[in-house]
Amino acid sequence: MSDRHRSDRRCLYLRGLKWPLQLSDPDISRYNVPMKRLTIVAVLLLVSALVLSAAGRSESAPEGFRIGVFVPGVVDGSPTYEMMVNGVNRAAREEGGTEVSVVEGGFNQATWEEGVMSMAASGRYDVIVTSNPSMPEIALTVAEAVPEVRFLILDGYLEGHPRIHTILFNQREQAYLAGYFAGLVTTSSMPDSRPDRRVGLLAGQEYPIMNEVILVGYREGAQAVDSSITVDFRVLGNWFDAGRAQEIATDMIGRGSDVILTIAGGGNQGVVSAARERNAYALWYDDTGYDEGPGVVAGSTLVRQDTAAYESTRAAIRGETPWGTAVILGVADDAVGFDTEHPEFQNLVPDELVTEIEALLHRLSTGQLVLEMPVPGQ
Ligand code: RBF
Image (cartoon, rainbow, N blue to C red; front, side, top):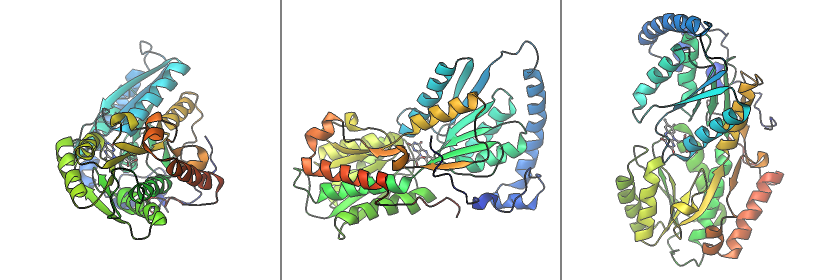
């Protein structure tokens, strides 16, 4: 994995802080951690962590490397989580001597910190692997409370903590690719393209990378094709409700969107159903989605979270993780892309569009077009 994009800038969250932080350190309030709760939970868990980790070192303990994967949501239907689990399992299989336990945190986000805290405090894991932009903050709180735990975080950014390593993808490039392709489709003569110059984006929820990077990059890409294109941005409010996603997507199509990018986990299927019923197109985001809706999913950007999970887990097992660093990977690293090779894509999409998206990928990978990913927190 290239470290060319490793940022040398300090993350805002960590600027000016000295490690290790004391729990009473007033700086910790910058992380919006409820202090009283944290202190109580931390003291209890610290004690149990010390007891359990001491027990873990007893002679009867199994040897080998132990990985806990915390899924903030559920694996099924969420491409980035599926890729994370696959990548971790592949690394463990290939390296040998490694146990992997996958813990699904479910959709109640208020319980995630507690879930990660008890995984860490159990002393059962050498490394906890997790994914999504909200996890660095949770990992930071837990890492301060539990002295030995280490975190590999995908799809998140936090630099400077000696037991946390993060890998973020250039979502501006990825969203721009999706938006550019949406712009090509809506201005094309494809059978379900309409003249409104309107494209849609359905998100599971709002969060800074969604609102400030993905939505912005998607609009930027679409308007690079035709500056009069507008984006109808909608929010599902969860990552599972395909029925509600179908209703929202149906409304979007009714209001002129002929192509909808869906980033809504289990809700994605609802967008595909609406697009199929109302003669529109869906775009998939994180992994190849053509088989999810043949004839309906017209394009699919890619993020190589499986490769990132595989490589970073392998490094962790080998003791080679650059702890404390945060990397950002993009098209030039082969970590972000667009699947132009799938037969469904080639059947559905006119050759000129294939050529145009390949040309855009080329411009991004050679640096002719530079779309920098804003560093979260700065
Ligand atoms: N993406 C999913 O596909 N499924 C999820 O359950 C999910 N949950 C998320 C929860 C939070 C708090 C945040 C900030 C993002 C979540 N994402 C989820 C989005 C995911 O991290 C990523 O941004 C998108 O998949 C685009 O790459």
